Amino acid sequence: MTPDELSVVRQRLEVFAVDVFTPMVRSDQRAKGETYLRGLLLDGRRKSMQPMADRLGVDHQGLQQFVTTSTWDTTAVRMRLARRAVEVVGPVAWVVDDTGFPKDGKSSPGVARQYSGTLGKVANCQIGVSVHAVTDAASCPLDWRLFLPTSWDDQAVDEADRPEVVARRARCGIPADEHHRPKWLMVVEMLDELAEHGLRPPLLAADAGYGDNSQFRSALDERSIDYIVQVKGDALAHTSDVQPVARVWSGRGRPPTRTDPRYPKTAVSLVEHIRAAGRAATETITWREGSKGTMSSRFIFLRVRPAGHRVARDLDGLLPERWLIAQWPDDQPEPVKYWLSSLPATTSHTDLIRYGKIRWRIEHDYRELKTGLGLDHFEGRSFIGWHRHVTLATAAHLFITELRLDPKAAAPA
Figure 1 (tube, rainbow, N blue to C red):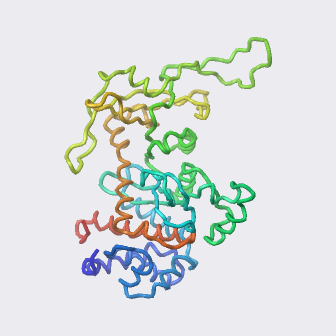
Figure 2 (cartoon, rainbow, N blue to C red):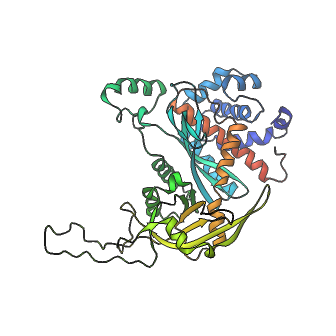
Figure 3 (tube, rainbow, N blue to C red):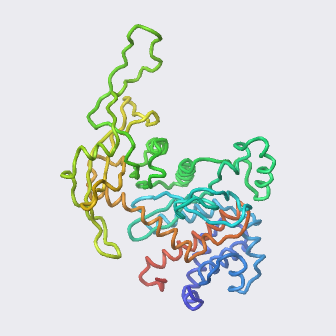
């Protein structure tokens, strides 16, 4: 926003800040929070402390103290933002993903040479994992976690490297109970935290980085969270009509230790299931209007039972029946995308595709948060500082989202 644009909505921003920063017990903290929001919203190439302070005409040390050493409860503010975002957006789904924050040095918490899907390569970066409430028209982050690679885990590194890792963690203020966890588990932790505050997803969508993990899908099943997730075509599944058979002991050797029914060795890859159905089984589905016109393609819909020793069975010992969806455009010799979904068998094919495709909104959020609101401009080196910065960037994003959804508001494009 330009200074003139911000002045038009200044009063509304102040009211917004009073509400979302209510968990901050001190008035000076709430004032600093509103100032930081103005710094993130104002136009400028950099949204780090010094440039924002210069544009605002305030002392940058005050902003730095507010983010890095002040005592306000980041989680309480983030949960208040999440409740407000769910009310404002009215999500049809939540989407989970992660995004990279390129870094030059080695001192920022969690920084390492690691793969970032956002960057499309291995790079020196931090990785943030997030959950977003989405519709086709609006979206906003609900929660964040900073991913810690094993090189930042004093319990995972070799004993010879431990003193250096302990020192790095201390310099960044990483809590003693924060250790390396896979990204999918961090998502489950966020879902549990949001559930504790009365927030549950109507549906969860994710890319193959999460969908390929059967433990992640089982964790969603355990929490009765419906999902539609992308997967790779080499995942295995049975046809939906395959039934397990009782284990029979031949009488020789040791008796089998497992007594649950065993599925026959008929599981094949998702690719083979789709090839068996053939291109004749495809149907055209239109899911939304894009910037370049109507978005549609050809899809196949099957019912299968995903296989694998980590796939949790139901109370009857059966593998769960799921939707297998494949996108197979007419101009492609093979399907280009695959999804698995736990949505009911009665779900319409159009809805399945609309939900499967809705994860584009999280990429929209990442792009807007980074290009317009300084999400990746934080230069601090503290663990709590990173989480506070992304929380404040989320607040700025929610404020803009509210302006856009209010036809009477003067909102930026």
